[in-house]
Length: 314
Image (cartoon, rainbow, N blue to C red; front, side):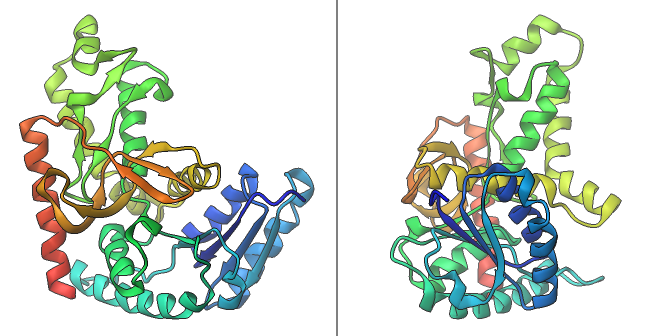
């Protein structure tokens, strides 16, 4: 088997197990280890996947413990607790920070100098920030899934609206992965044209109202899915797979991952999403893209919202 990289997944819940399955189908890695407090659940997921091994490219998938993380190129953290009825967002965050305390303490002895940490558990921006602070790792080695999924959701909805393949819709969602996220319509293009110009050719709707409606649908997408089936996991697993691809293939792809802010747009000491060059190093470079005045103000408000949440729990 050609060594294409090793990924450890912490947590074998909906997101963790679906991520392992998606990586297995993609064929970008040669080894996947799944670690979960519920060893039976992890072993059951792995056994189920291994029974389909004759249908995919060779990959070693097994349930393990923290020492089995050794040699991993990427550790993906999907573990976390679910929100209880009546529980505040702050209380949920405090409980997930305790989960991350245990995970970080347990995994640190087994990380290589090149190992990257990819946080997926929500609220992902704050937990990415916490991982950097607690682990003491260089900021470029810790990233969050951020608004990679939100950006894909925006592309899909714009595709549905315009009748154009979503792969030919170019846009970003930046800021928090959450209620203060910022869709960047000012830089949204189709066939080299701004979405405003493209939609002028159509003229079938009130463009401004349509964009506001689409932005709201993107922001509320997870709530809608959770209301209907209890959790989101297919699309986020694909988003994680896309990030892993960019890292292991050293692609220098531009993805809206969450990373540590050190001055872009005057924002410091918080993690949020910007278009970012991602490669084997992890975070290669955050890009300073030209935003409208309204978008830049919204980004700063998003950063302040995240900082306020951090102050409430740390």
